[in-house]
Image (cartoon, rainbow, N blue to C red; front, side, top):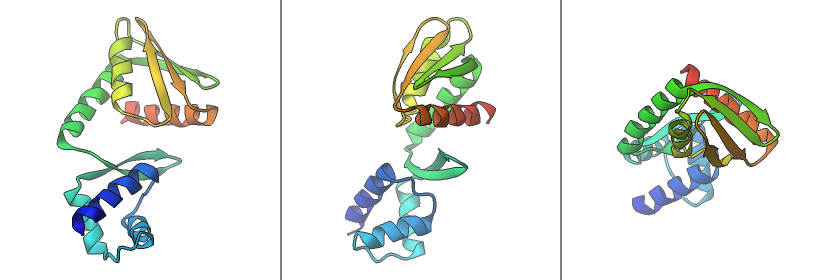
Length: 150
């Protein structure tokens, strides 16, 4: 039962921006699981869930392995060290980097697995990121600014 519930939780947080334990419990109840807050809290800990910014001042749960956490810190450092500026052209985000850092910064952005980003192309000091929509481009700009500013 626990294994099945854990699989459902992982699928739910991949599908929806779930911000609180109460929201997660409500989704689980909709799926036929009667859970307490203590059970949800334990599941979050056992699944090693973490919260990240979901935009608009909200947060959401994600699955984060310890390896991902170490990599994430490294990618954040690369992004902060290499970033110069960014601007949008509709659903294309153009990111300027320190000379020679575009590929590393693009790799860091790709590794962060933002669902809004389709892919990145990097030159020497410029990255072009294809974003799904104009609205998603604004969301990504906000997320990147939050990461860069810490």
